[in-house]
Every structure is written in structure tokens, then in C-alpha cells.
Length: 260
Image (cartoon, rainbow, N blue to C red; front, side, top):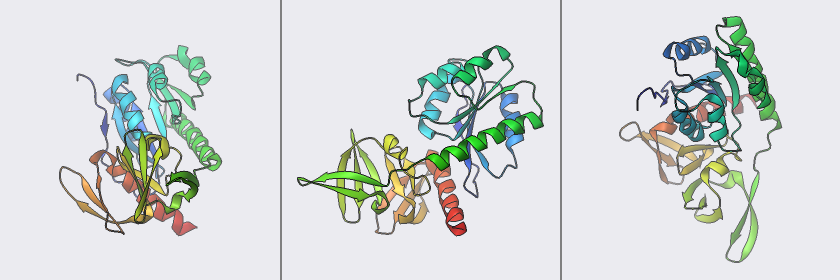
């Protein structure tokens, strides 16, 4: 597809990071933002998109924390991109554009900032600091799912989320795997992922979520994919597109727990 460069970045983060995506149709514009983010220990650029259509699919799949979003782009403009996302989409958005006439509209949809080109490093840093503050406050206010209601064999009981080993999709349901048992509940992996603590659970495949504490080993497989071996012997597949997400969650989880 001409002009589309929506691709995962393969950099390996070393700490818990703010996962950022750059959506900009000009290569020089993307390069400038990436350069200004380089060296920031709190931010990892997980991908770049060069048109609005590709951006929608990428943002739905990766659910980044922060999006640097151009307004005028091929296929869909920046506002169309945001309108196409799920209502629960909660990425912080910094608009980056050469057109000042969209500023009011941007703030009407709760954009974190509006960077007007050309901008210098100081102005960029102010926007980034504002986004970090927004994300830290949101994280502090977030109440993750602590237990789930499960119906099994005619009875209803509560299951603590930390007891779940891994979760797999089955049509309009998800199956919760707990030790040697499993329970089917209505929902989707994307919907459940949004409710679970990302320092405890991470998506490793479009249809699988795993409890980080249950992972014993990662084994290279083929074409950039891995086998994820759990402590009970279960073997799952880590898709290439979710590899960086797992690495970030694992290192961030170790970092936060060592400080506790």
C-alpha cells in the first residue's frame, strides 16, 4: 500500500516505559519526533504510521499510552483516526501540525497538547511533560479488576484475577485458565485486557493474555516468534508483534517490584 509505514519498532526497552506511537505522513516529521524522544528513559516508540487508515488498525491493536498525531494525512485525517477508535480507547494525544486552525477542535476532544510546526526542543519537552503528568495521574486513578464473577456447574463464585494463569479467546467468550481448571466467561481479550493491571497481565497474542508471574521461560521459535513456557508446563506462542510489549512488561514489573 503506497505511503503506509505502520510498523512495530524492534527496540528493546529496559524499564517500564510509556509506549508511544508517531502518526505522521512526512518521513522528516516522524524522524524529528523520534530524535527528540531519543534518550528519554520513560518513553519507548513502539511504532510509526504514515497514513490514517493504517494508524487506526495499529492503534486498535497496540493500544499505546501516547500518540503524536498529525492532522492532515492520506486516507483519514487525525480527527477521523480518533473517531474510528473504540470508545474505551484512552491514549493521551499530542497533535503535531503546521495548521493552527484545528487547535480549538483538538482541545474539545481533550488532546493533551497541540504542537504547532515548527517547534523547538523546549516547546516539545513541555508538551511531553504535560503528557507524562496526564498519564501518571490517570494511572494513579485507575482501579484495575481485582476479581471476576464466574459461573460454573450451576454455582456462582468470585475468582481473584491474580489466581489466573492465562486467558484465551473462544469466539464471544474468554477461557480463564486457573491451575488445572478452566472457566468460560463472556467477553473479549481486548475488553478484558483493558481492565487488568498491565504490570500483572500482558497480551502475547491477539487471542491470549498471560499472568507475568506464571512465565518460566521464553524460547525462540521461528520468524521472530517465541514459545512462552509457563511454570505448570503450558506452552503458549508469543507473536512477533507483541514481543516488545512483553519485554516492556517483564522489565517494568521487575523494576517496580524491586522498589516496593
